Length: 497
Image (cartoon, rainbow, N blue to C red; front, side, top):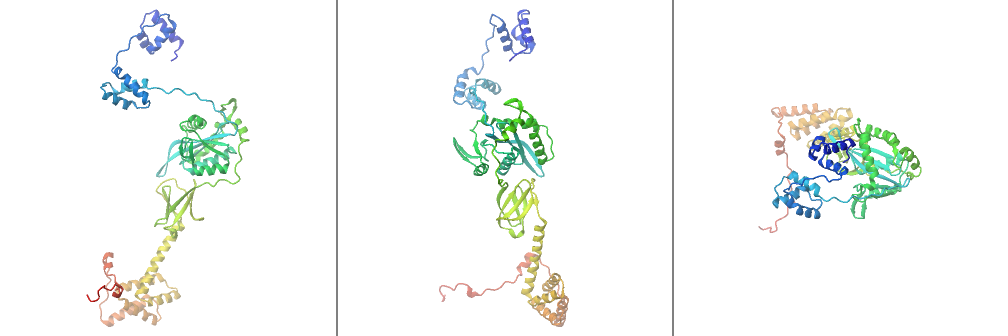
């Protein structure tokens, strides 16, 4: 610890002139005793008297502690405290942890070479977590995609609401467009988007990233594990983003935040001093580096998150916590979802069957009016078909009546409903006979059928029918059952039994 010259002079005066002891000087000046002793030792020919340390309860256990830490340098102080307590130690855990902090072996400091890269040779890529955003009922992570050119230190910054592969590649594409080219080598941390598996030097890359790198003609290169210095430029860039851009920043939504990030990258971030030469700016270094970057591909990479989905019994597909409608004719089918930040497209093979705006909330039901209306019309038509089929089975002449009513332009739905009500009150044979009589009279209308039924009832001297409405479970008990031919059953093995 370095102290001011006036404090050092005061320590010497109090000790040699006023004859104050070391402890008194330390208390009155607010410095540590060791600091006072060091100042006196530097300016005095005689050694400063020191007091022997008081014995501690931990002294008998120091050899055991040092031996254990030598074998297990990262063993926690809590576990070590439990071990010495089992061997008779009775001191406090807090004091024990302070002592262990001074006894724990420290790894030797490692020296690093300053890494210099050629112009246009390398860029570094990484994600940074910046908290969460509440969108509707969903809480989405706010992730920053950062790419920095290693030579010029030009930064590209883009925020996403996830860290999926589609967002990862979209960040690359937009960074290449912002830089006007591609570096020859891109360094990655051991992200799942880049490296699926690693055993020493044996690396299994993500096949999607390999295809993307081949399309843009650059080399993807992962850094060694626990070697943050190899991609220190992007890590410092993320810290620079936190401190100089994101701190105390306000924004309305993700689009507004990305617009501000783009202006910051093109403005203050590019105008800062270039670390290699403080007489130049990052903008000037980047202007020279842009000329040697690899060119952009002629055909752009097809972006979009693709996912196989299955439609259930309702005409909706589930994607990213929300339901999107599809035509009702596609229920129980396997479809594909192709989504970006703004649009969700639903494909049946190569045919687009639905397109919706993407929702970043959760538990929402996004529908197209045409899908809902088509389903409602289909249900109504199905109900009408069921009613007509029931009439046709009970009274076949109803088909002729409906056909003639249609020729007259009558409402077939109301006619069908009226005939069904008559069928609930009267016998099917009586309704069939009444319909035939109405057709003979040339009046294809339910009123004519009703009059014919009334005349037949009065002629038979029967009381007026009363409609009997039963619960569904009771009505099912009275459903007619068609008797099966007994010949369909297997004959007995012994006919004479």
